Length: 108
Image 1 (cartoon, rainbow, N blue to C red):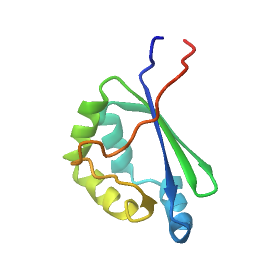
Image 2 (image 1 turned 60 degrees about the vertical axis):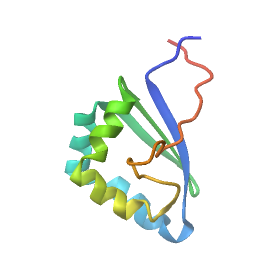
Image 3 (image 1 turned 120 degrees about the horizontal axis):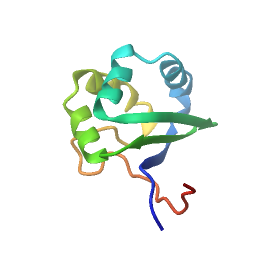
Image 4 (image 1 turned 180 degrees about the vertical axis):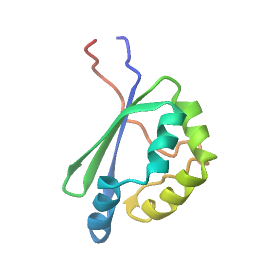
């Protein structure tokens, strides 16, 4: 099966941080938006189901995108705040900061 250039993962947001996490994502910093674009990320969506969030974006070179964001001051400041709100890691210095979901179907 051919794969797409889409990447997805899911995280739980801590109940006590839910309101703040949603607020931050409804009104993200302009520099965060620009850094994601500069990294090569597009069509990025986040969906909420209670405290579970599903993230999906497109990117031609995800390793390069994550490396770019790991060096971004804006991304590191954002991640310092939001990483305390989720059960998981935004630390792009880790070998696998985000555990991607396996793509099992792609309709082109």
